[in-house]
Length: 106
Image: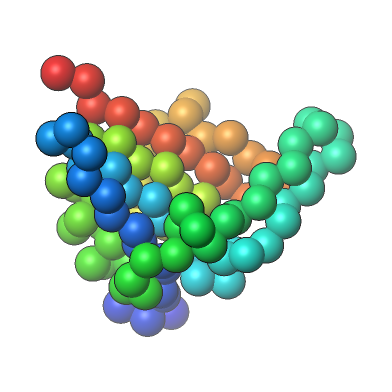
């Protein structure tokens, strides 16, 4: 599957001059991710993540203009890493699902 076929939910909020973007892989929306070993329970809350359903290519274009981002899922985190937006050391794996955040500080 190419980046045009893979879809993610993208929610954009503007606050105090900042562009805050939350993105999750389509299939994760509304799911609970539990990592017993790490003691982590993570809910991919539709209230926080459900926005427009876009391709990975569209999501990365928007992510490049974000000042704060919250990402969850193999597809979006991998694409963000491949585009130089996330470093491997910034990725937290919950079970086998990657989660990453970034903030650009001026």
